[in-house]
Length: 614
Image (cartoon, rainbow, N blue to C red; front, side):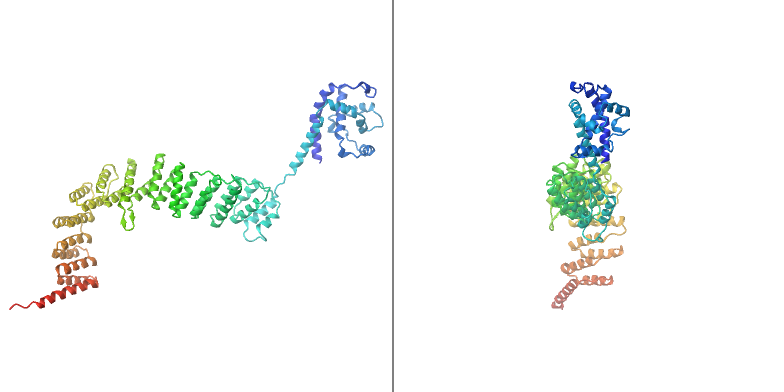
């Protein structure tokens, strides 16, 4: 207790004397006391009042017994005010002697103080506030004692706690029982230190946190909860993530405003990495209940988690909320959302995100835009049938997107343009495909053989052979060499209309430009000759194939043999072709062989019934 007393004495020395001096100047001693009290100067009166106030300061019932004699005997043995004491504030021995000359010689200092109680009372009335000073000094002393009694965590106990949490399955007893034995001060700084300590298993952190939540002296804050979420999600363990979500659910229901948007976003991203899209969607649905603000990161992490598990319908609903709330993420993430939907066949949703970003002057990466156009140009099927109406709608969207390419970007967008032309030809919209091809020639990207062949094939299917030939000439004009497929497509158009003479001209031109033709080229002509029942020309083409290094396959022989048997009833030629097949290592199937035998028996039977001429 000596420190508070010393502080009180020091404070008293600094504050009491200035307050006493101006009051002494106006002091008037009563007339009836002049016989016992000598006339004092202002200086001596000031010293006297200081001494009297000091005596009054030490008249505390806690230091005196009820007997005045006992007080006198006990306290006179050790003077309160010794020579050189700081409490006198320079009260010298000469002044003390001057004071005692006017007092009783046998009285002690405390007797003088008691005899001057009335003077002190008079001084107290003038020096109002002196008692308040004692009360302030007592309050300061109590505050100092309370500051000295603030508890802190023992460093050794903290190290013991960290070692306990970092261990796994090697501690005697349960985690809570060991924690109860520790006298821990659960303040925010201490909790953050524990949560930021590495190599603590997630299950131990959660167990420790649950134990802390049971303590009434602990006040949970958002900072501490955020630190817990960060520490658990670093490990990427499914069991710990589920336990953390259960804990946050409990905290969010009991204490509003503690769970933050950052913590929930981190948890959604964690479940996305773990491939738990449904749980991530549950976390998303709890934002409003916990009073958390949904931001752009929230929407992105939720859509990502759902698309990774192919929950595209849920992802579409979240995307709709994102657009309504005007909370688009950054450019790269917008591009990823578009790619997510394209992979899941949600091309319309992806296109909607693209249009919204375009209105906001946000342009996703080129790779995402190219992927979207290619996806819109994908052929949609309803069962085994082609849904041309839906194809027409989606390809129109893709065609509009091509206009958004800059002049520089068009040079490298050959794949998106090609996909759009292919789909236009697939849905038999050859006019728009041809128009787009001409635009590519004028503005880029430069079309290649594949695009030309696609348009030429579409024109031949529509029977526009003249325009198909013009396209082939345009290819040659642009420095492109028509390939075997180009010639085969034009030949197929002519044979479809029965114009075998024109088909043979194209065939001769193809042989001049290409030393080796494909089996499809010969098959196109053979099918055309068989259609016109010109089987001898068809058989000769089959032999010509071998001369040009093209080996006929089983299908070529099989179809030609069937045509000879069913339409020409020429089983002899059919047998020769079968022998050629065996020589080439090809085996004719049993049904076609049986057909040859049947036609042979039919022909021989008819010939035997006819009598020989006389």
